[in-house]
Length: 189
Image (tube, rainbow, N blue to C red; front, side):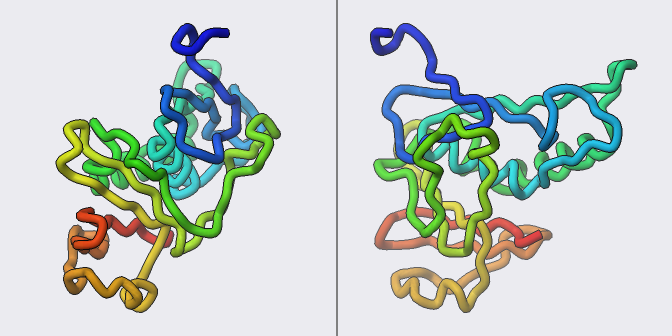
């Protein structure tokens, strides 16, 4: 298919690199199903947020499926996860909303599988060394997001201002002079 005639869509998978053209990944809050299943297993808010950040940093969109019950209500477990995600999106909104990919998507040891269509290849565990970059629409602010971090884990960042509390969650905030970016460190839970 010629470029720009369709959107690349990867079901329950992800790309391993930044893509110049927009793309999309579809996943479900459920680990096993696209619809409601009694006694289902769900992904954690942390896992879904990390996938969202990784996807955005690679110029992608995440379509998140939530399977309702037969009466149209959202299962309590799924509702809890969505509310947790909402809290994290509010805290880290500058890195998510109205953002664009940076010139590099990120760095760190966690790599996407080489086969993006392998079932559940979108579920990965990130480390404190994994960082994803985004920038504002006008390019004036660049943001980097770590999967999880502590003050000691950042001691190698020599060109940064000392950490300061950013929110009620006790996140750390830094301005990195080398990359001219703000760092929002996600909670470890």
